[in-house]
Image 1 (spheres, rainbow, N blue to C red):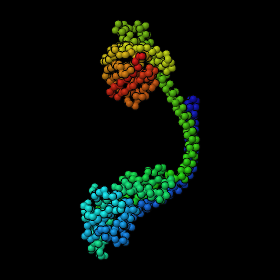
Image 2: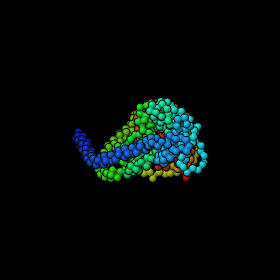
Image 3: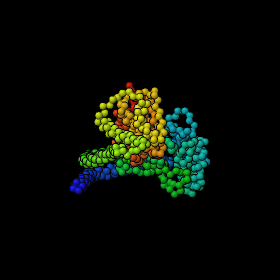
Image 4: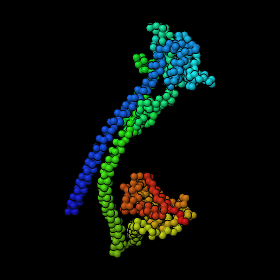
Length: 556
């Protein structure tokens, strides 16, 4: 009783000691983290504010540039814009717009019943205009009444009929999407008679591929956001259009959304056109690379590393102690189970042999039939005792002194025959169907005969013991590359997949194990295979059967 109390008190003391150590580790970690977190938080607030300011500046600059043509060119007071006859005095206004703003692909206009005229860039002609190779130093090319502009004019006339001030819509011309912004001028204040139409077209595909990446980079430089701040521009489908993915913490990134409209949205706020898509893109800026924040982060990390090293050291010490205690307890339990099992395994056949001997000595066996019965039982128990002793001796042998192996060329068929010899009577009495396929022309293996026979003996014994109601065993050997594979197959109860690795360890038996056993058989097979430079593999399916394969290299 005193030993039990001592054990209980020792366990309680160890538990309280572990609790106290854990509390100390937790307190140390919390105080260290709290101190460094406050340091980082103050730096993060400054950096976050910089990110927001950069996002606001970039968004404002982009929106202002996108509305520039509508607010400065279309509303220009130059009366020449209404002249859409040669020599096209409006060319100078268009040329100035092309020089300042890259996104208009072309301007267009007409007056009253005049034919429409397109004013395109000479260096970036729309593909629906004639693509001649004429060399022209002037940046504007005027094309009167192009066929592709018919659909656009019909769409503008719908807004003229509604007496709108602006005609804004999106249209596909020659499979190219455009956003169109046109100013409608009238002869009178009641907008009864159209005076002129003047507008521009933005190639949305080109704007995505060329305009936005270039203008976003320029704006980031002009607004001073290149100092430790990275930006990215995302479309409505969350695909990146420009910039790079912001690194670091998401909390330090600022995002702003803006519409992809090359005009002031107020113009369509009251009566938005149905054929104008509402796209919202996003600018994201991050100051994770800001030098101030980087310095604060590095300092905090150094402090955390020191604290973490102390915490980890304490935790590792506690873990090692706990694992050592658990391993000691597990080893003691395994040893106790092993001694109990081996003691029972030794006593059972010895008791049976002693009982048979006493029966024979006292002359209680009267008939030859009883004598043969007791003789068979005596042989069976002797066989059981011999296997146990061999396994115990083999376990000590393969564990400690593997150099006492005697490696010699051995014929696979001979090894199988010797292993089967000890099971002949048991197989016959239990009416087992045994299939043996070991060709005599197989190459010899380089092996210790006693060790290989013992390994095969254990595999055959397992196949017989767990065969269930299907008394069938297959034993075969075949040459594969530079090895010979010994295969033992049964149709027994099988082994669950989660136990396959465990049952190959010493002193471990599966949950479905029946009868007596010491859990050494498969461990010995595994070790014999490793000592011979071979491999051992076992596969099984509950209710279907088990296949064990022992692979041994052929002799030199």
